[in-house]
Length: 311
View 1: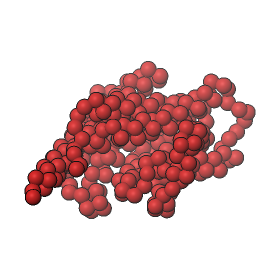
View 2: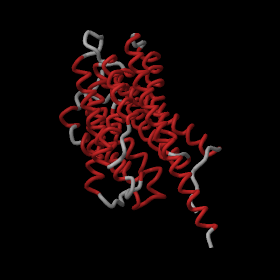
View 3: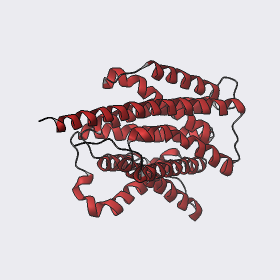
View 4: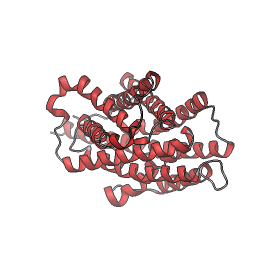
């Protein structure tokens, strides 16, 4: 009989793994911002995905074997991988022109857009709270990217394109999770990015090899991306996805802290207010989804228990 997942040691472990993954993603974005100031975005993206793919082959290849490439809907898995590669590219272009925290906040608009699109596309119920949260989230982005602010308008445009591509990636993730293994989708994303951006290296790679310090940073970008995804996967095995969703916006905190420590950037008051609004709206929607799914699981468990008592 299926029982709903309840809070416990496993849930705490999942939360810690999830927050750790968010920290690694913030580290990756911060390192990318440093590297794209010295190298073309496709070069940085190629190194990220190549290291990620290599880590998966070394760490998971011996145990997973053919399961790394086994899929039911390979075409859509590749489309999802292309969306992630596109998001990486435009995120890198945005980070060339804008601080880490503000860029991260704008890209985090994508989960709120997904909530609205999930109604017609995934046939999910979109309530009044979802609409209010999404509209408030847009208001938060306006405060961050307001006319007359300090942010580069071209960088904002790149970040918004990254949002559009991320929406496609997240929608496909929700659709494909019913038939595809998470590890296989991660591997296809890593390999797709490696091939796509690797093919661009002859046109973008210039000059001698980078200094050893930069080589270590290239490795760090791939390692943070790969290990961040591994921690995410482990967290979802420990804790309900709906319980983790409100914590996603903790990455804004990490991004702001690292942006200040590494680049000395402190967002202005209106930008901070906008980030808080985006994070609050996203967390509110995630908390609502968690509450609904917990209630559904409880009702299902009670119905099954009643059936077990019937003669």
